[in-house]
Image: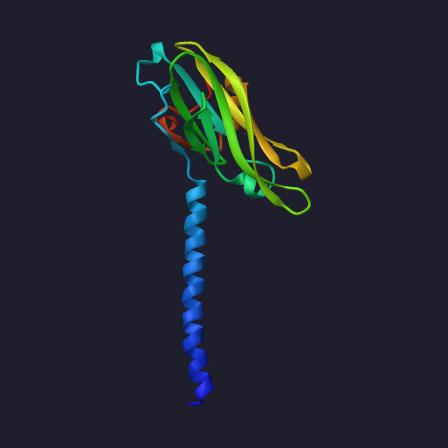
Length: 181
């Protein structure tokens, strides 16, 4: 055996192990970004009967094209308190205390010719009545070189059915999905 060859094989094995560990870490890290979750500690979430709460579906449709970092899950806040992380292509159902609340959306995006990273945020006020059902669609606004931000808007039931047809329901929406009448 040539001395240099044995040393090369030993160093290649270590390099291969490091690359495999890095690859596994990247895959696990990206999969963690894609999962949606609800923060049940938000005080506006209610466990009261349907007639006393507002049922609110929050829908994040898939996009026509890849948006880079803006495709990661977005942070949704209700009255400046964490509510959930929402992945692209998913929707959920929340039972909320009636009244007015500010819905905030925070996401990361790249902007400018150097593809720098920055946080984008929007906020909008909604009023929820007891016993009513609301559908809120989260849509990206592509500011081209300024980056991508998200906006929340009320949609009617028909539009919510169209938007959610091929999406994954999570949380309470699995038990009570958006269905056509």
